Image (cartoon, one colour):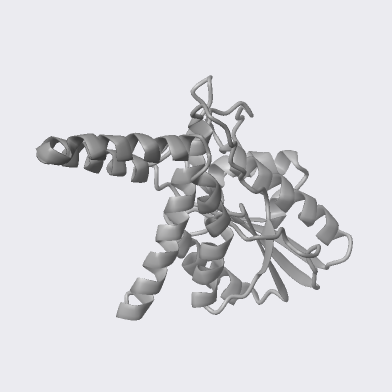
Length: 262
């Protein structure tokens, strides 16, 4: 049986990407409002007003801003990464999307993670004896290629040596990222670990990695910002969805730990 970090070959992918789509939390909330409006005849007007106001506050950014404030660290990484003789940079996956040519590519957030990982790899190679980039990401979206395989050619373009890239392409969740990477780290005995992901995912990722006894240096690659205004904006809904997803994920982590599932 092949290990969960088996290698994959490069493919030629375009850099043009669509806007990241939001998932199901806001859609579920909207469906619940509609169901309550249909079933609650006497409360239809106030429920409709609440729904309109809530989604306007989200899409105009006024409610999205505090959600992002809760989900993301208040400050960027306080200092540059510290390298050791054997250093591993852990690049967390963030999905794959189709571009305008219907080619599978990394989302915009992941492009930032790839750049930060490659930049720190270049700096690491100047001082450390061993520098590797562990790319962790499976195929939760059931696309033709895994996240790790899709990101690989982008790292190669950024002059990360293929021999220094380890692909972990079985993880479907952040928790599985931490679990599967812990196996690789345990076998390789690194002196320093650097975790690269977006600001919104970092708090939950650190919880998961700590759960497996790994305490990496956090290195944030990109922070999401709301756009406050009067007119609704789709990107504010995307940001709200992402923030809610991470906050619910953190709550789920603590609940699962309390009942012994994690």
